[in-house]
Length: 306
Image (cartoon, rainbow, N blue to C red; front, side, top):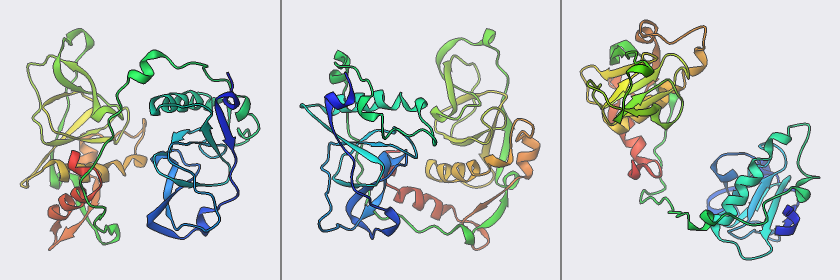
C-alpha cells in the first residue's frame, strides 16, 4: 500500500515564515523543523490563503525530512511541506502510527536527496496492528497562563560551581555486583533523567540535588527528586548554604547543560575541573537570584505538572 492510496496529498503554495506577521493568538505556522510538532510560531491570518484544519499530517520534504506530525490545531503550511489528508476515516492513533512509519524512511533522504518526488510512492502498511487503536492517548494539559517571565542572560553574573555546590563523585558498581531492584541507578546517559536501570542498593545518594555526567554523555545534567545510586561517571552536586528545590534545580541544570560543548572524550568534566568551572546565573544584590529562577520555571507551560 502506497501513501497515495491512503492519503490525499497536497503541496501548498509558497509561504515564507520570515515574511509573516507574528501573533500569539492566531494560527500555527508549520515549517520543516523537527521539534514542537513542526510548529515554528503563530502568525496573523492571511485573507485568501488556505488554512488547513486540525487532524492533517504534515511531512517536511526538506530540512528535517519526513518528520511527520499530526497537527492538532488549524495551521498554515510552509513551502516544501506535504499535507496528507486521510482518504478514509482514521483515528488519531492510526495517524500517529503512519507518522512513525513515514519517519522510519528518513534514512533514505538527505539534503541532496529530498522526498518531494517520491513521497507519493512510499510504501506503508495497508492495515494497522490491533494494538494501535487500543493504545490510550491522554492529552497533556496545563493550567498555567501563557505568560512566561522575561529572561536576560546578558545581565547575569558569574559563579564558580565549587562555591555553589559540594561536589561528590559517583561510585563504580560492576554488573556482577548489580541486583535487580527498585532503586534508580544513574549512568552517563543523556535521557530518562540519567536513570539507566533499577537496582537493589544498600547505600543511596540523597535526593534534591543535581547530577552531571563527567564521562559518556558529558555535561548532561538532571535534577534528582528521588534517592539514587550514582555510577563513577557521574558527579553529584549538593547546595552549599542555600536551599535547592526542583524548580531551581531544573533551572540550574539547564544552565549547566549549556557548558557541554567545552568537554568531550579527551577532556572530561572531572570533579576537580567542575569545582573550578564557572556558570552564569540571574543575580540580585550580588547573590544568585534563586527566587527568580524558581518563578521563571513555574511560569513555563506545563511546569504545573512537574
